[in-house]
Length: 407
Image 1 (cartoon, rainbow, N blue to C red):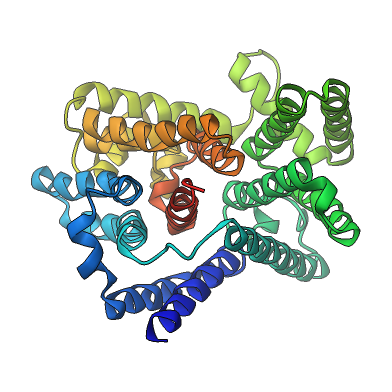
Image 2 (image 1 turned 135 degrees about the horizontal axis):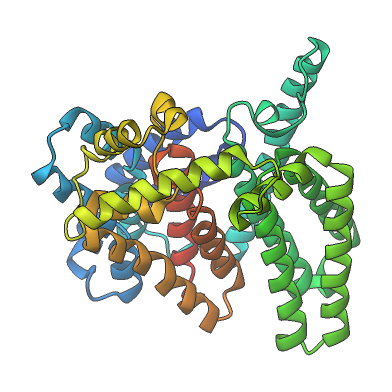
């Protein structure tokens, strides 16, 4: 009985995290604390730790904490301990979730639980998007221009993060429709189609360029599933054509998003005589100075606490005013980790992303494959381990999806 109570608490905490991530992230740490306290009280780790390295799935789950251990080692050669403590606190989920899931009694979890968890996550994405729209409507009534667009819409989230959340929700729906279409109730199918349309439009309103790219990736993977796995070539090609028509229509209707895409393209291609995208050009400047720092500290990086100070120094030296004013990070997690921890850090990051991705592809575990792919793509343009919105989302879903990889 006692064991069952603890399992219920563990599971309801997981559901609470899944729902609140897209609704109000400030409540998530409280739920995580309850999860940890429940884990400590159960004492499962007393039984599981001795066999941790004998059970492959538990051992591999724990290995995801390796990157956090490297950040701890980065304290040995840092000077700014105040920022280091803050950074380690932000990244704590990278240690907590692998540790809890590798030592807790998670044997009761199965694909049915995962499906329920994802439906709760979908509900959270819907509620979160409605809250953003409600706030945007308030701004619009006050006469604020562009209230339903980009950062004014995504007022307590960075638009790229919320777009990533919605893309993962869309990926789950697409996979459900592809693999369980015949057994899904008609009402659920209709609900899925409505949600796909809702999330599609919302990502355009968020005007996240990587969000749009990831939508294309999801459509391409869906078409590949139909063509190569289900041998439905015409249906797969039709899906791609239909989706590209929707994308074209979206760019036509949402002119602000279209302008951002065009400006970014011209910036990357170096086209002369065209207005360039400020965010893209700033990122390129930041990436250039980040590479300079990496070249000078390639083996061990600059240390957990010093990376921000070193970046700010480079911003001053190269007169990158906006990055200096807002003390921006590298806006690329690969570069951020490489700067901080050197070759060991970037190696750990690449392994924790791409080894599970390859394994998921071999096992046809499509949801986990898409999850890792989405995160790997998004951290090309955002340092998502530098904020809780990115760290918790990745660490939580990675732990629970990997724990079910044996299914």
